[in-house]
Amino acid sequence: MDKKCERKSQDTSEEAEEENDEEEEEEEEQEEQEDEDIDEYTNAVVTNESQDEEICTYCDEDAGIDKECESPKDPVEYKMRKKRALLKFKTLVEDAICKNYLVDKPKKSKRNAKEQQQQLREDISLWGVPLLPSRDHEGTEIVLLKFLKANNYKVRSAFYMLRKVMKWRKEYGTDSILDEDLLTRDNDELKDVVHTGSTDKQGRPLYYTVYGAFKDKALCTKVLGTEESRENFLRLKVQNLEKSIKQLSFKSGGVDSIVQITDLKNFPAPMKELSSISKKIVTLFQSNYPGIINKNILINVPFWYYTSRVVTKKLMNPRARKKFILARPSNVTQTLSKYIPIEQVPAQYGGLKRDNDVEFSPEDKALEHRIRANAVGHVNIPVTESGVMIVWDYTVVGWDVSFKEQFIPDDEGSYTILIRGGKVKRPTENARNSYYISEPGKIVITVESSSYARKKVYYRFKTKPISAEQFFLGADAETTA
Image (cartoon, rainbow, N blue to C red):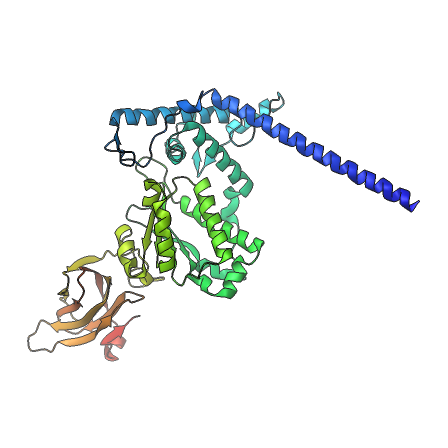
């Protein structure tokens, strides 16, 4: 009896496996058939792939000259090609939404007619922008152009990329990812690894990733040690990117991209887990967020990483190459201040922005003072009233200078007071100080550069009333780190 039962169970399991195999084959055949149906829909608009006009997206669009191919183009014809590609793409997207195969694969059934019409009434959108061209939303063309540019204006390729993005967003749950609490007690340190903050000179949101925290092997193991923890880190990256996209304005003249800043200070030597997740992040962002990242600025780049990236950049096309900017530790402030207002550059990178700053805000604009190479510069801050406290903030791009801060009274009979002085090669924060003014005069900041490079000094200041208690306690000099 036992042997018969065993044989029956074996026969049953074999039959179940055969049924599963048959179901999988049927599903594959159905998917292939559905893909063919999509191709039929696509070919109705784009009749031949070879007829797609491929446009070099890294050429000089204003001049109509392709620098890479070194072939002149008629600017008018160039713009007409782009317009034709956009028109084809809009027609194809409109058709895909109306026939319900942009997000899901088409199902030929009369039963689904009402469901399709119902879905049409829903807002099929991407990054908060409706995709149905007939709705005439001003952001629709801007979003669709991002897909065209990413595919050299090849309509079919752009359409398939859009479908894949919409499918991925549905499966990944990006529309609800902002509501997820991905930071817990176990991984609370990640709030300092991935975060957003301030904007660049064009108003683009800044998206920071600070990998230096992973020098702690325990943290690295905790964050990247398991498949679940790596997936959580990946979702955190996507969540912060989606948070940045919420700040964008997809309209004419609006800000429709972000700047990604990656800090590699104390970046651990190449390790399998970190390398794997980094590649996965890059691939995911490139595949699902075309045109969203305007620049990738890598700062505090280690020498070994710098040399490897220099070689890699040579293999990129010029358009992609321009998006990657590498800055060695000595050039961090100079690089960031080129794209970001110095008031928005964090103090640890040589800027003027501090967390929870009670003295200054980003709206308090800094003044600029230039110093010639191998010369001495003086920044004068006049104070015409007495009985006030003056607070000043300044940073020297590049540093490696000698400096001193003095108070020089207007009265020639009074003494000049040295407040502070020294030599700084590479400070972790900007210089901030304060001084009680008992008589009219001026604060003079002297900066001496012994290098052959020009220096820029950014500074700002303000005066504020001082209490009687502070005055009688003799608050003559208060230094803030």
